[in-house]
View 1 (cartoon, helix red, strand yellow):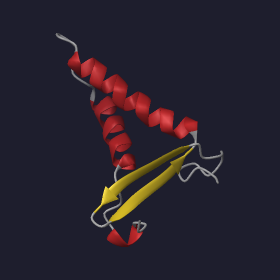
View 2 (view 1 turned 90 degrees about the horizontal axis):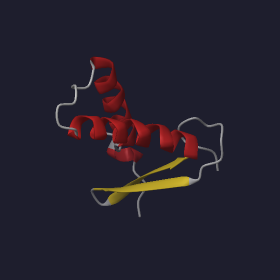
View 3 (view 1 turned 180 degrees about the horizontal axis):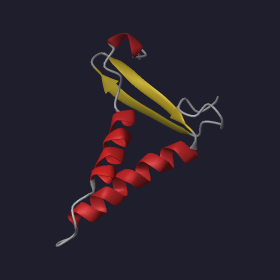
View 4 (view 1 turned 60 degrees about the horizontal axis):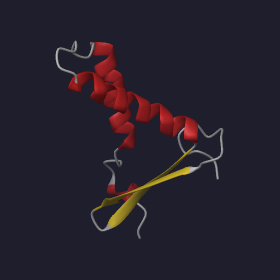
Length: 82
């Protein structure tokens, strides 16, 4: 099964999130999964340090895109029933 994001590599990370009565699933390769994980973790570490500079606009936008990619689609027809 190929990664649902890049469509190039074998999926090895399988995410599932409950949405209403169903589930939203996403199957990712390790590269795509790590990319988002690294962005989110880096931003949290930077923001949590006392005296740390705030995130730049570019960093904040990249973080928001990573979080949005991990969120279930707004369309309820996109969910997979359990």
